[in-house]
Length: 337
Image (tube, rainbow, N blue to C red; front, top):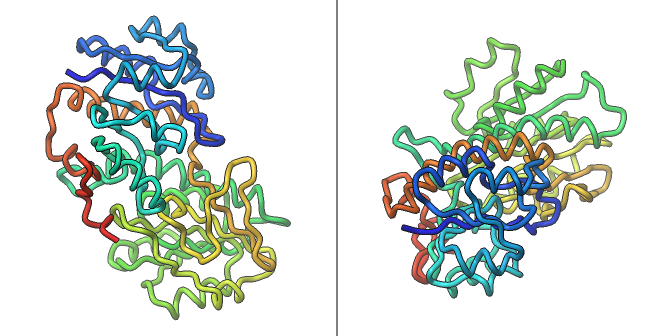
């Protein structure tokens, strides 16, 4: 049986924690030992004493977590400081988004650890159960962030949502709730979205022509395309960027996988904006951390059954679908550049 370790997230402006005291209590009641770094839950408003009462053992440093535990349960990908702490005895369970970082891929290959990525776990219905929970939050917050960072925003601003999966759908519904009048949806699977026209949305089949036309007329653009583990395609080229209206904003939710414009690169909650001419490009890769308490509860609730199974070496098909790297080998086909 593996020992669970919960390190404090050290990615900049990441305030979530992977497991809350509620889920730790369930895990320890399954006779699984849990170590957690001191104050790991503080950013999400969970105290050390709550974890102690749930049966966890507090460690002072991140080094201790990696030393005593072999199933490391995180929120975001290991940071460079953590690379040297990871070895072939570890299973790392977290959001990896490997396609956006060659250095992360190489570090995990060299460590020979087992890397199970939340974002590539697929259930029997073809859904992404862990990714979906954070995607819904990211989609809702994307609209709120656009409202926050756009000058002179109002409900007459025209919105285009590129990709209507969990992120895109959540953005669409939040935009409608906020009272925006013009909400355009564009997706390569037109059959999936065509009925949304009955609910007041404008729907479009994905093509360069349609995308270019919509971008030239949109004040807020939500980029929410995700293909299982693949690097995001740069679907908004410089020609399209130059067509955007003055004071438009792109919320590039696909930044975890590399982003959808040539100028997209990861930013932070503290400094989220890249400026291009008269356009703002928002490239925060951990948008759910804006509401860390709620996001941590949602994440922990969906991952804890997987944690219990992995700790017991019960690798079902869903868990197997999440294994990206193991024993120095890349197992996820989309990572073979």
